[in-house]
Image 1 (cartoon, rainbow, N blue to C red):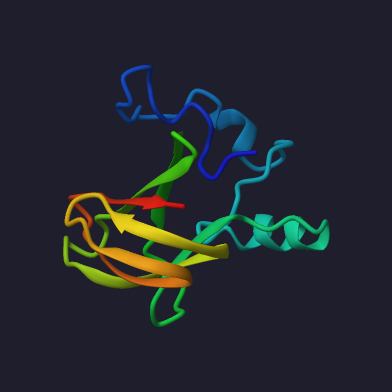
Image 2: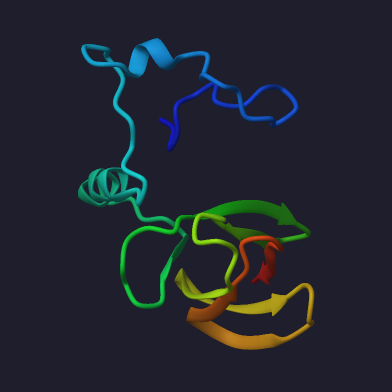
Length: 135
């Protein structure tokens, strides 16, 4: 399962002109491309009783302007890196991070902390990732 066509980037994380597996995703192929918002997978997983521990959405609830979410474990805490798409020309925009269970957070750049929360309003930059410690 992938959110973009597999093989879109080389071993140095540079975008390829044409993904290596592009033929699978053309008409008649056996592969299905996930919707940019992730709605298909979210619906399928929810039906199976699976829910993501972290979810990011636009503060206004509108679709689009995807956020790449990277998750790491470090000394019992989860580190999240969030990076917006540069599609809108590079402006900072409001997003909401939803947590599956209440947790304290720390912004690793500013040091700002929250108590246990299930929702966190953020201003995400398309150039500089937002880095959080959760838990």
